[in-house]
Length: 230
Image (cartoon, rainbow, N blue to C red):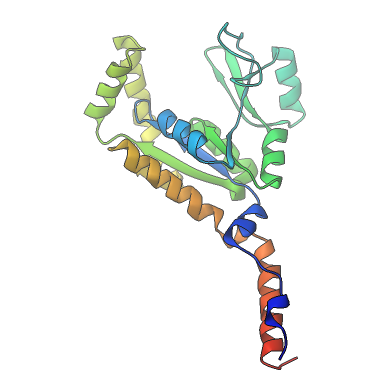
């Protein structure tokens, strides 16, 4: 009888190790808890890393270049933008922020996932350049009252700033349907598990696992041999 054990073995871990990584984008209005969910993912998921932005903003004393941001001059930023080295960019309060292309491409090719904590405009720019790699999740608060309460509890902003954030949220939430998934953060643990489930499911998509095709072909060849069809 043919030896059916000679075919290549593949486990779920080995299949995942051979896949292309994905770009997990989290967006939300202020006070929805997006940054907390992102922090939990980075703490608990081994194969995901945070996309570190470049910025022209001056470095603060508590910040480390290459950890919090890649700090560059306005001239260097212009060069990167003109050479197509940026996946997305935006101007915020007179300073520029952007996602460098090379680190993301390197991570994806190595089968690592990249987490993006960016706004809606940044998400749409990623759509334009790498839509097949992007998995986007829009995080919502359970209510406007709760969102406002969370902003007050953070004690980081004045009433004027909080009002401005609430007004901005109106425009942001209108784009919810342009995201792949929507998660309501009424309970942090449940919201985190929801995002984690999305990540796990997207990792298993056959389009991200080219090695599966060869593995299945090998199994079919072994099966035909077992059945004496070869």
